[in-house]
Length: 159
Image 1 (cartoon, one colour):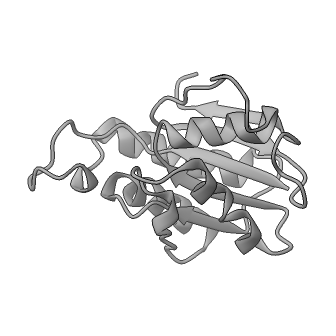
Image 2 (cartoon, one colour):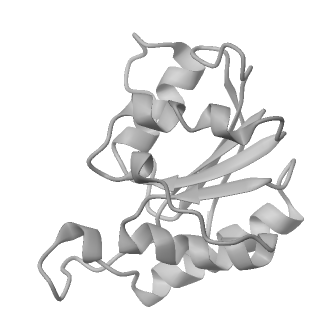
Image 3 (cartoon, one colour):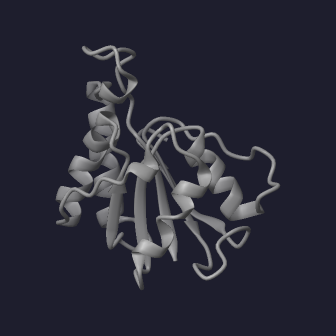
């Protein structure tokens, strides 16, 4: 299975409500989301059968062009919020069923740490730190995901 880990696009520093969960994407963040959608549909090893997003506004806005490009409905999963932990991210894997690829849109540091755990196990040192608008695809054994993965693709607009 391939898990495309996507860190939301570049977002505003503040929100109108003052709540972190309400921060929206800046124009460059929207461009990053569009580029990721295009990458997943045209270049990726396998298009994701399922795309899940954090409930935070910036993650949902990142997902919007991806869902449109993949012809999927918006799917929000509270386990991907910025206030969650790595085990919550890993808990979405069984939801994919027999899918060959899924994508999740989440936040640092948990999304970077999830990559480390998939690749090097629970005791992994800090190996990755995703930038905003970055996608890292990790192929792993879904029956035993921890420590079984390796990076198969990486994408960020302008890189």
